[in-house]
Length: 595
Image 1 (cartoon, rainbow, N blue to C red):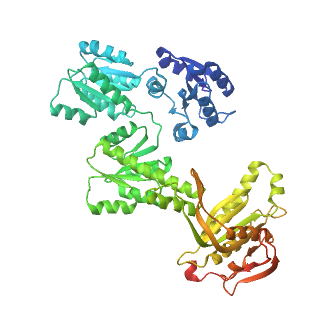
Image 2 (cartoon, one colour):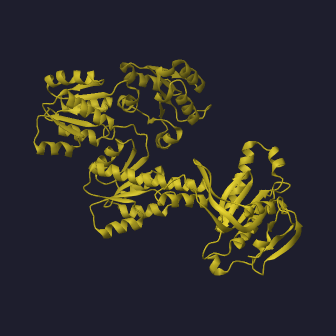
Image 3 (cartoon, one colour):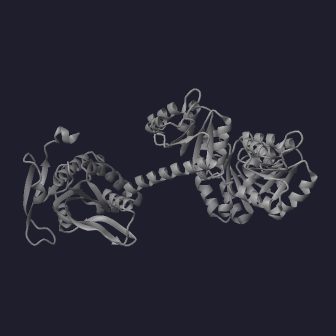
């Protein structure tokens, strides 16, 4: 198996060879991204890892990482960025890399970062002073498909764990130099080893012995003598819960090292990336820097307590939406209401179990993902469609094959860019999309400001629906006001362009069918009918740069409205000529309406 080292000079490959070549890995030093690409194609699955610099002069690093993972080596290839400090560490997820190795690094650092990623088999450390136990247990573990390293006292076990970063430690309790309890506490208190699951196997089987073991941080406890099946089942269960850190980043803030360890350990086993802080002030600093997906914070802390930190987070525009779970011994209704009012999403009352911690975290993150989905859905779907889906969900879903349809009085607005097709023909596709997105960014908020629902975009056209709503002005007046605001905004849109881009806007009020339209697996909650068609026709007949409304819409406008009639307009599909009104101005909103 090979490990490629790109652009890290002459010294780094030699330092990497020292811990990795004894494990059977061949280190290949490469000078350019082109050489790495060629080598990856030739080596295929034999290339198990690539160590990369934080910056490349000739290639985008994120693009290179994506290319390597999509190549012959596949997703099994581990990519590690070497150096760059904390700034690079924060970009690991953005770059798509699997890990970060800071410099300077020791052999232990290399094995801690790379060892679990490039090993062919899981590595287990067995620490026991009994030769008989070693002779009995090592063959069982190797037959089950694991590699095993052996220690004969607690101190040797700790040194091996720090040096080789095994996936699991099995330890006896009664050992010389450092007993199993002390070994476990040392492992769980070390940042480089806290994630390693520990299985205690001991002849000490009283309740107090087991309690001491779990207090020290062990993940499971077996009482000797144990069968081969018991050992392999316990090992498999612990390793199944030890996942690579590939999920969201969680910040754990607590002045108790033991609590930080407990929470960090149980969440790291679920695949979360963990950062920790020892007080509220440091936690606030890290939250602003790292923007974690979730913060778990103690209430009582020095410098800045959890409640004060929560309030500071809510004041920051870039941190106010980070969900916070508060850890507290306080369990009164008043305390819970106070934390909830400050913005805490949940409260874990001490003492709590690891399972309770994981369940609470998963629930809060699920709620966060749901809120993000809803925000995204509101972006991609019209408000009417989104509200219809929400109502259906609140009703229990019902029969999704059922459709709804009803007649409603609505006002429909169409806008369209004048002469857009010839303009688009002279632009690149990227320029066309950029222009339209800028155009929509300016006009769509003006429609929403008048409580209009953007039903759809058709190329450069916008279709919006204004419904009659209690407590609001007539839909025709709101739609017309939105149209005038849109035309006013167009005066400042790309003033450098000659000739200036202009839009036409048509508005019509009438009865339309509002309902579910589409196939069983793709529907819109939209409006159809003559009222919609006529709005489109009025837009086509409208002079560029103006708003033309139908007679039915004009009748909803106040007497102070200034409009010019256009008689004898022949609408496509309509037999008799109609009158359209080019609206020039409307009276301002009354103060109470504007508020």
